[in-house]
Image (cartoon, rainbow, N blue to C red; front, side):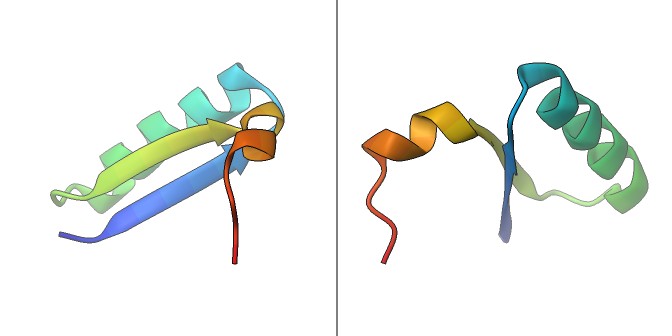
Length: 45
């Protein structure tokens, strides 16, 4: 299964994108919504 990560500044923006993409894709895909403020806790290489 593929995974799509949405990084947004506000929870509402990410939620809207999440809902729209789920509707458009219509296939099983894991979508994760991450807020920019949470990126401080994630190591990105």
